[in-house]
Length: 220
Image (cartoon, rainbow, N blue to C red):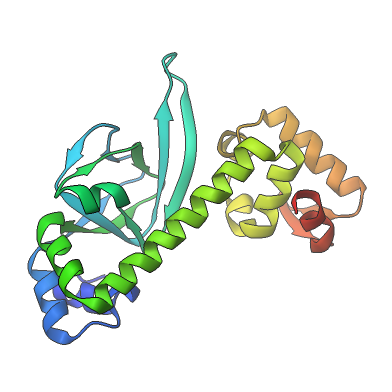
């Protein structure tokens, strides 16, 4: 993968509608960074004069309660923009709203927030792209609310199987349980029940969906 910001910026979906001169301008205040799994991108309440774009890899976001328990919020994958919408509007700095940690070896684009913000206000195409990213973030937050507040354990598992089957099959059971805020034993019971009902089957420790509509009916 190239480390040249201009080459990378011009290849990213976020900027594919921009003119060449706009891409060159963005590249002038960007840098490429490589991180290992387990590296921390930022901590909650850090103040960062930067916006991040995940070129390749994934990042988990979490908070820590007063008993030092880690509470998983959500994660983002390749071709995702990491930014706090309200801070992008209100100031030049990004006030970190959660802790962010890399789940795998990743490559990110680090964008200086002040010149980027100025470009957003001046460039209609870029503004449209940022709005699309904001709507995606809002939709994800809505899903998180439904998952954690409305869904029971079975609904959480069914929703993840339908929408993130590849991720589900890559993770270990305790990692899935952590993400869904359920106990590993509860996850095992749910999977066993879905298997007995003929909704799924498990082959070589991977879930195969036999009846996707039955899964959707659990949480819709």
